[in-house]
Image 1 (cartoon, helix red, strand yellow):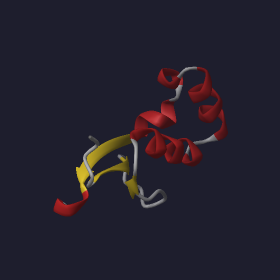
Image 2 (cartoon, rainbow, N blue to C red):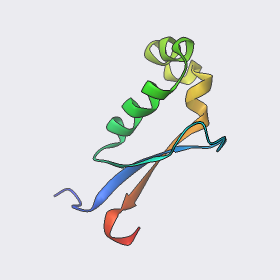
Image 3 (cartoon, helix red, strand yellow):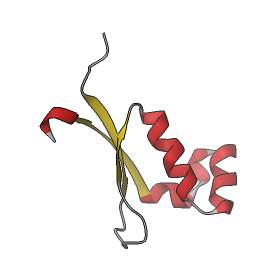
Length: 70
């Protein structure tokens, strides 16, 4: 049974105020879809071919949290 209150958050690590962290995703994949929408076009292509080759994606992290405790 899935945990009811578990959500995912996309964190932008450099914290340059040009990107916002975003909470409330229902899955890790959903959070990564958001992250890919935020990265540059060159890194989007790299991410689709091989996520490990996308430098901009390394600036992001996905965290799981309990919605009731955060």
